[in-house]
Length: 194
Ligand SMILES: *[C@@H]1O[C@H](CO)[C@@H](O)[C@H](O)[C@H]1NC(C)=O
Image 1: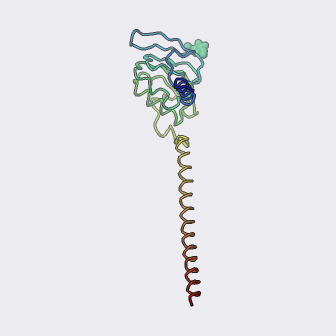
Image 2: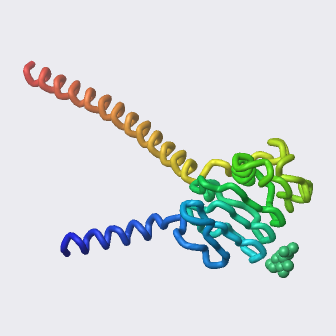
């Protein structure tokens, strides 16, 4: 394999391992138009029965996602969209458990207007409640707020610590045993000499 081939293969492998989360083109279900050179894109993904936010170009300026079937936005999904000025997320069946906090904070960052009209659909006690008015208490405690990776680390650490303790016990036991052995050998030599 020559160098170019190697680079291609590695590049392809990286692409498989870490697929880019941002598209450079218009996401297929949406309608896009340019707002002019370096002004970004107007992206209309409204009324398309979307269940998840599509991959969006980084230079998105206006984003319309209202009247879809979105219930949550995975944390981090929208972080790259720095040039955003206008967002509409209303009329979606938002599930207001602790995971909705990402969307709430993100919308607050963009503007108060973008948070307006975004209402919860579930759980039942929060139905029709504006996302803007949700308090920490209502969001509840996420039982699995720790990302899975954190839990993995926890278990790995636990196994490591258990391993260290077992090793220490074995070493202590081996030392004791070897002391006894040395003692016996010394004793035997002593007996021999006598
Ligand atoms: C919402 O979207 C559905 C299709 O998913 C469409 O039929 C309906 O007209 C839309 N409602 C509004 C108010 O745009």
